[in-house]
Length: 309
Image (cartoon, rainbow, N blue to C red; front, side, top):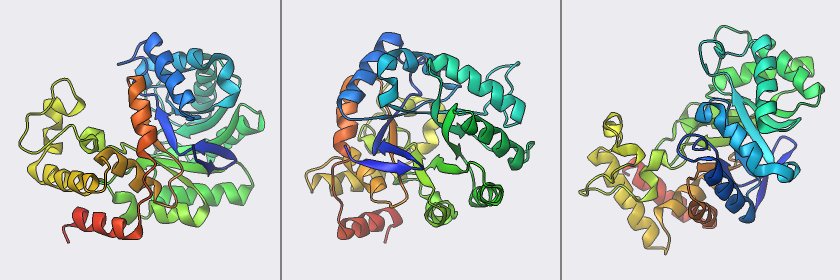
């Protein structure tokens, strides 16, 4: 498994998203998925306090057990959990959220601690100051953020470097073959300029890039996009693009899943492609998908499919 840098961390280019743990996957199922991931060479596990109603962190910590020091744990804070834990990025909330995550994970340090979403009510200086305290105390190794704009990243970078304190080393935003806004909103450019590692979430576009959803065929039951609220994601226009991507991949002996992973990993600022799994066999598919070395000609042809040119 290839490793890439996020700050001082060396992470596997395929990571495991743990959002299903405690929700769609029980404790025993979590152990099976985690075992499969480690056996496949994955060392990067991304969770959040809100996943599974806090159960994701608990299940992940138990599944790792004595292997914890061989693994890179990334978790997040900042989204409201309940009427008592209201979220945000104030120093007091950060301190409590970190202690709670450490307890649930059964560890005394978090490798990558990420602000899940910007907090408009708290100055970024206050947030970074509190996160720096956690780094100095040895409770957090590196800090990151999610859902940040170019401007918000630049503001955070300026404060951290100007005050010689811990800086964000990663940003986790929505990015895939079908959602390319980081290329146009300046976030990828900011990452390249400041050395931030980019972590795409929804790399499979909520399942559209798995090959399960085909034009002219019924939507598979009990899948994420079978819910009525996702009807707008299954338009004929999007499914037509998916069909073209499937044809492109199959003509080269690959699947659209292979394309989704390998295309992202051809982007120089992407550190790891994080994808969820509910079954051990999905791990093998995800890891295998990262092995396609796309050429410049391949990238140009894919870009033509995506832009309709």
